[in-house]
Amino acid sequence: MSEPRLHVPEVPARPGEEPDFSYVRISPAGAVPRPPIGVAVRETVPLAEDLIRVLDDNGTAIGPWDPKLPPDTLRAGLREMLLTRVFDDRMQRTQRQGRISFYVRSWGEEAVSVAAAHALRPGDMLFPSYRNQGLFIGRGTPVLDLMCQLLSNTHDMCKGRQLPVMYHDAPRRLFSISGNLATQYPQAVGWAMAAAIKGEDHIAAAWVGEGSTAEADFHHAMLFAKVYRAPVVLNVVNNQWAISTFQGFAGGEQRSFAARGPGLGLAGLRIDGNDFLAVYAATAWAAERARAGYGATLIEHVTYRAGAHSTSDDPSRYRPKDEFPAWPLGDPVERLKKHLSGLGEWDDARHTALLAELETEVAAAWKQAMSYGTNNDGARLDPALMFEDVFKVLPPHLEAQRAELEAELAAARDAGAAT
Image (tube, rainbow, N blue to C red; front, side, top):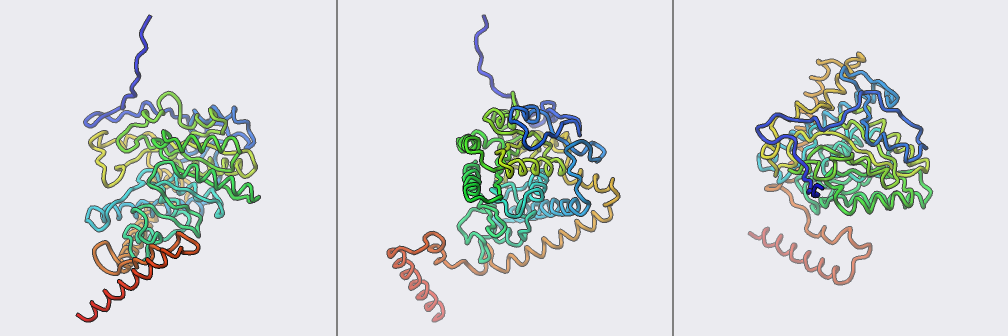
């Protein structure tokens, strides 16, 4: 009789080796059926293991998941994905120049956020992670506002209280990003439960990386969503790496992350996260299912983190440098561009012109952002802001502290004027 052995997941390729994505299970485009939204959870088990794809290798949309979006929507999606990438590239360079302290790019994952922003309704509440800037751009948040948050300047929507990249946009119903992993899952489920109690038809949606599925908050949220049939869409962005830890260590080796949905009583979908049309279609299906009272859906977006985890990370130390070109699901921007070109709705000249336009737009926004103050120069936030937005009625001891601070600030200004 053989003795039991401890299994340790293996990383497919290390620095200096050839990229190896043979572990990624890929279904042919258009091959996965699209069931009605009221399908029983147990019947979604194959959908959680196969890979829902719409765009084939030629950029043609095929199969039952094709959402048949009009060209204007596709062009808007392409523009917003390109804007996200241009913004990311500019902020990456800015951090390397020492002008902001930290940044997280979404390079290679733009479709995950932008397509979802288009598929969900404006009244739906979104709970992003720190790599979902495309949700903000897809909902119309100006990149100027995002830049000001990175600078913590006088135009910062967070008033200097958040780490860089932890944006929010209350008017556009984007919840504050948290650096603590998976906290947005129970928050989204709770918000969705409250919306259902109030009789609203708005739903919630949340995003985490595959590494965050190891957090307790992930499992607590799934249980509440299942028991109370919360109208929420729960997204797992499987970009293959949780900082330097391969996705197999988070449990993605034997079964898909999407399979955890049916395992706990929620519908599950495993989708091509680099296919704008597949992301849109799956998000719309899950949102319609939630709105109709059939409960939550867990969506796994199979994608690839093309860049570093953040500006504090060096991926060349744990994976081959040339992995992204070998990624079998390609580049989401190039794939949507190819699809539009095949429809006769786009071409290289228009693409080049749009890219130049967006680079000019981002450069102008950065110049304006710096006019509101930078990390080293210019105007500063009023320190008295620390007393706002916490209590509806400020307690007496904080009133006294605020008065003391304001007196000290006034004395400092008078002393500065005198000199």
